[in-house]
Length: 109
Figure 1 (cartoon, one colour):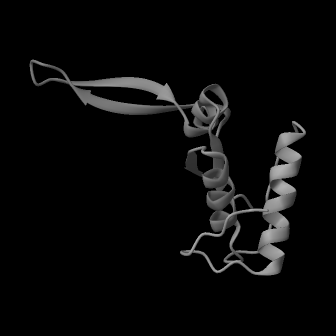
Figure 2 (spheres, rainbow, N blue to C red):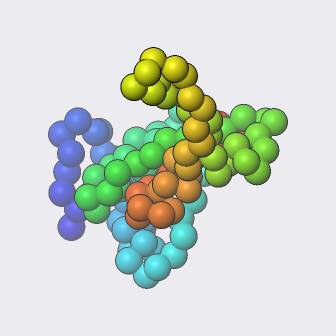
């Protein structure tokens, strides 16, 4: 049985969904949680990750995303001399894949 989280109001449906996610994950399946806005998808995924000791890495999606936007993002750092320097780093989606975390892709329409 799944342990309860006092911060989350778990209905029978939520417990059933969590159990199915854990079972599918244990079987090696890739998972995708889909539902209407505000129905609790993110909370469900956070709870799932917490049960398995995994981190969630959120990534905001938008209509005009390119393939590069899905895999890389530009960041600006300050060097020791005070100059700004642009660098590229992996997106949360790629980091989740490489590091074994859970990617949460928000606002997919």
